[in-house]
Image 1: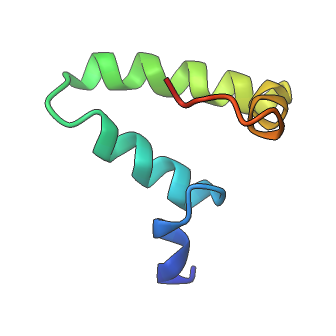
Image 2: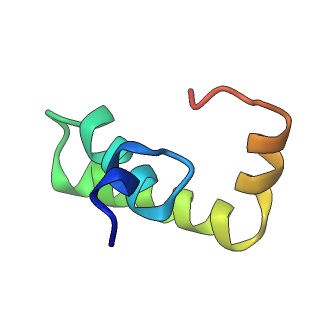
Length: 58
């Protein structure tokens, strides 16, 4: 794994890094729920479609 990937939100590692940083202070359960939604969006292709339309991360 290239360490620069962690800083690039378009990579899997970078997206995970972003999610960790954006959710500092939340409980592990809250983070886990968010990650499940993130994974489902990624798996069904919705995340790619949102990215292509430049949809905000919020």
